[in-house]
Image (cartoon, rainbow, N blue to C red):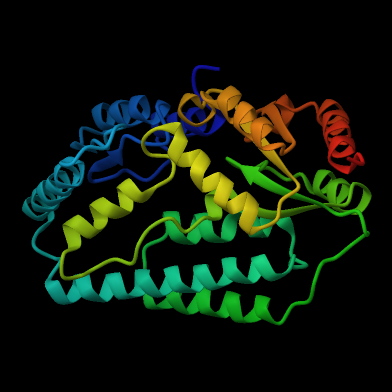
Length: 309
């Protein structure tokens, strides 16, 4: 369990030459400790340069300047390698697409505060994390987020039984086919996931007039960067905003950065009187998951939520 399934899978793809060969390796040092080993190995194997942005865990007056300088230096390194492609007009165009996507995602999140949408929870889990975190901003993607919002705005309420349990999800859901499990949660247990930690739009709009500082702020605005107290403050706001009855935390094996403080997270919600369940699981390989045991624990957890005060 030294690394999670996702990092092990990526390493296998690198060493087996399954993944496309990159021209350069880029990463920041937040959210994943194991990825550092992965990128170093890939850089040596491919013989490609490896660039790294350091995001400090403790913020001081010069932190923003420090990260801004790193991003600007990286920008010029890439220009020397690939040529001057990022003109001011191109930066303004990309930032405009990114900001439009951000606004559409914010509208979708506001819609979810108003009602539980009748959408497969796995769809909701991934819309914003994938669109906002992994795909390049473009006109097509901005149009897509607008269409998603408009279509979801026409949907009614997924009310279900009277005793619906509204859960807030921390970290990530199961990432393999697990439809029977989610059907059981929704239809038999009356569970509705009202929001997910990874769907939170935490960053400010990008400013094309100050692009490097704007990108530095986006990195530093992330709830997972810095002390655990920042993550908990964001979780508190989301639990309250989406009227969650309880918190489900998934501890994926090998993820030191994001699950290392789980006992402090548990204590925090206990002090607030909010039921909390931690599932120690492998989110990427169903062969390692004992669903019978997980279902038993969830049943007990829901009994606590529904227990009369």
